[in-house]
Image 1 (cartoon, rainbow, N blue to C red):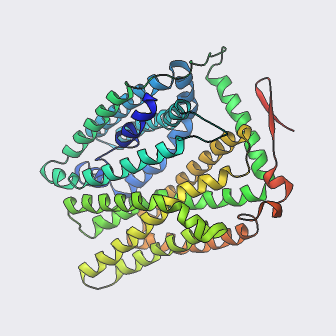
Image 2: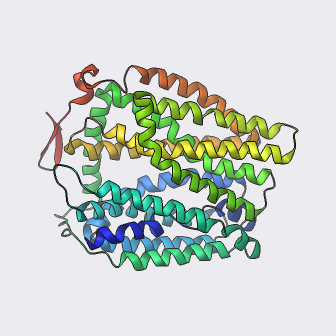
Image 3: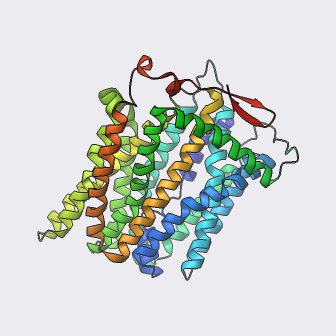
Length: 427
């Protein structure tokens, strides 16, 4: 009960970095002197680090427990911010991101698992999702409100926002020490990293076997492979555009914080969107989201009043933030539909891998485009390209996703696994 009461407060401070994202792009380009292409390149490397560090993270959690893992992860996160403050080249920036990826890799596993084990479950239902929702809402609003001051601190000194962000991480460390361990630490049974990797490979292989047999999951996988990467890359592209439009740092941070609040508000509309559009919810999100890239690129090239130009572009930014907020919840929901407890975690893990691959590929492509063309053309090229790609993907999904249960093939919704020793087998 103590963990459940503390968790929404902890998540408000610890779900992600506060005070950082509103000014991180300006900090890296203005204070540290990195190019836009270099920033996009390092963004593309972060998912790679998360994939590589996933197994070591799980090993640490099993060895020292979830509560101790959270304390350690938040401490490592603090070290990554210190590394960012002192970085003086591309290699030291990459090192800082490796440290940060390790921290978030541990946190992403341990945080939700600790909460899940702390709340009661009756007939498959619990207050887990409600507490997670409250924590996410608290984070969005705290991040949005505090980030409004970020730009003004940056004008005083470019390092001040980073120091304040570090102070929030120290609060996270303190809060994580207040959790209680719920379950006993797992015995290692002599497993090392190599053995753990083999087991992980077996489980992912089992999940992909199900995915490749299910037309429904194949379609969702294809959708995820393209759309997640576009959302991930859009953050740096939006900030690049604001820089090109000569938006002052203090207003830069206020814009990002305002957009974060928009995202927090629309995160609660995922159920409304699902009820309204039912099996066409993802189609609706894509149809609204992707065209905004082309509009932003074209408007930025127009010879019109600066105020009118920035107003239209910010309106498109708001649409993007509004659409991407409910997407993550709806996507997770559709992936887990028709799955049993035995296969659900494995499918989720497999889709996390697909999302990381998507983020790597699209961010690398966007980074390459930035070396040969302008940010404005980047928006137009990506928007036009993804309009075509997502149209094809949605046509494939049309007869595979969002059907009534009786309309699916047996292979789409029926798959069970059992454990034989340390291996998972289909039956």
